[in-house]
Length: 324
Image (tube, rainbow, N blue to C red; front, top):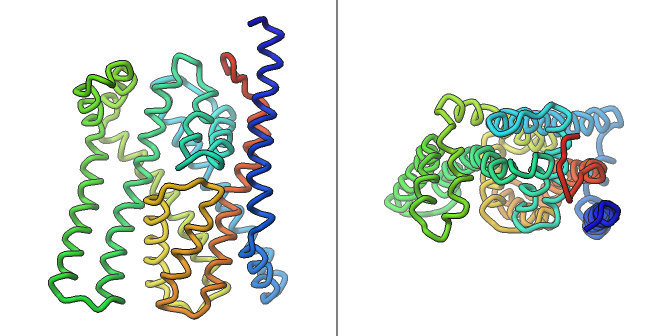
């Protein structure tokens, strides 16, 4: 393929990705009834409160992804040193890819494409460590919150309640143990013959010390509490009658279910809305308001970053090196 042909093919790939992303975004946002409901909620508060609340939610979104950029720089430093701006483009490109691929799998490809070709496979494995750290928090807080929910709202025998708590503690502990021994994954991959070709890429897992894994987990924890805070802020403004403790633990359950159910990012609001409306029906009759809040968070945390990322997608060279 000539240089000119590669150039035009590269343009076609960029246009296709951005076009597909915007089509997905338009088709879902345009038919998103819950966003209209959120506008109705906003009309019920004074103008200053409305602007300050939404400004804070968007600011928290930016801080959230800033922390992800910092984490990505830290995770990839042993593979390829990247600057803050390149890491930012990398993260947001991944977010654009994520919205139209199952279970966010496109985020891997979209992010590592800004690394040198020979580093992309190892970069995907390193990125997986960061996502695993996020999953650990979702699983630990989610499992314990589900045990609390069963013992609080469901009429079950004491033995069943006790069993649920035991399972939740074992489940949470297993995630923590596996995370801090992530090199076990490299060992397991090495034992599976059909994975011989990718074994070398997983060797990077041996390089992560427990201190480094703890640092990644701390950054993930900060992100976890930031997007928890987004829900809390909106619920305190629009549903101040909700009991605070129950409200927070149900948010953890929402995160848990969301991470456990395979879906496209663009359809993710349907999963969130369904789970949230059913969960919060135990403590409020304002299910429509809950779904509207969930829809707003979905738009701010996933759709806005994907739109931003689409501009970075246009600067990626999909058929060669990316040192920009």
